[in-house]
Length: 560
Image 1: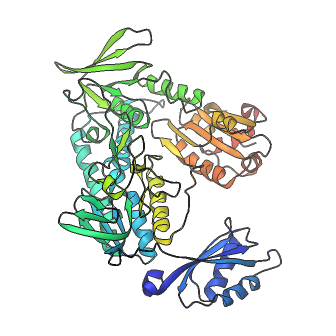
Image 2: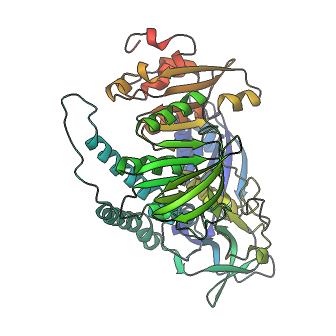
Image 3: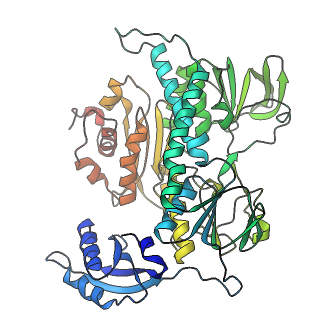
């Protein structure tokens, strides 16, 4: 039975429990609390606490007695402080709230927050002015990776990597691909978003929300008051102040995914994640692609040897790079566009192509919200100014997801949504840990990272050791005929704790999941060296990188 089924008489409690050290301890604590009248207990041995729901008339004494009784020979449990997590209280001027939580937006952060709030028994209203699902399912993660996979299949068909295997690419019908993509988007939007509204039962309004005062929003002619609000309106492609851009047809990451014909040539302004992924995809589909970037080095936040080898891998497929130049203006010319850039020595050069793709970052969607009326300040980037708990300068209003301009990943957005809902409704002060955020560039090979770089670790005072397992020592990469990159690992020299991992490999996105757990859980070099790594997998490179701190992995037998 969920707390929502008990009505509004339930309160959430949190009990400190000393002596919990493992998952079994969590199970023992949950069993003891549930047997003593707690509802749906959730234990966390790392924080040494058990959270549960119970009626206002709940007597804690049975729980205090049950916790020590659950002790065993190896663990001694002692109950500590019991806290009642009180919801945010309305002031005297707001006794007639229409909802406990109003969520503005209908994407990943919004849905994660709504589900969490529903589980807490809150009354939820969600407001979406466009299409449910937000960026990820509609115009971001899903359609872009669908295009990348299609381009990979086209590339495999058009190239002969393995002797004796002959194939050819007959044609690319991008219009048919877009139609198939739309079918997939519609199915997942229905399954993962639209159907969940009815399943959980919150109210969904279609329209544009704007604040009229610090505790009221308007949607059309309807005024809605709430105990708390969540801004989860996402972000949109940012356009640089480039002379001539407004008068020249160009693509963004959104419109590029709807092209029904492959351009003969493509200039990509920017060389970040989106630019690299879409650049390689269109190169593989038949475009001649040139990536243009102001920075002199590709991906300066990545270990140089990996960034350089990714550039080599993309250049081997025909992509041209124009790095370290200053875009001056763009012009419309017969047959396409011309981009004028200034080189590092002050010369002007002209780059021409049929189409221009602008991939230079994102901006928060806040323009229509009238946040000033709500007392919500913006930071220098135009995003809501937040404290570490995701609360804005109005204590009733929180923000989550891409609108915060935090790490632009759907899993971060969802985690922020859950946390913001609990902080807003229960008065908690939780802070999202962002020390182990995985990131993947879905090029081929993939580039993935988590945790601290070597420079970051040293700047924080760590004495570091590093290990690098190049692609040629990872048997899976040899089978894939993938010669670029490898796995680079950063660890604390004293403790051996894993601080960060970067990988350029055929399946680096899969490998980085294990690396994320290693960084998050504080695993050590010894842990990675002594575990059993399956062979032949790219993931074995993580163990080889740990071994490489002290020895040459090229001088080891296959699984030594």
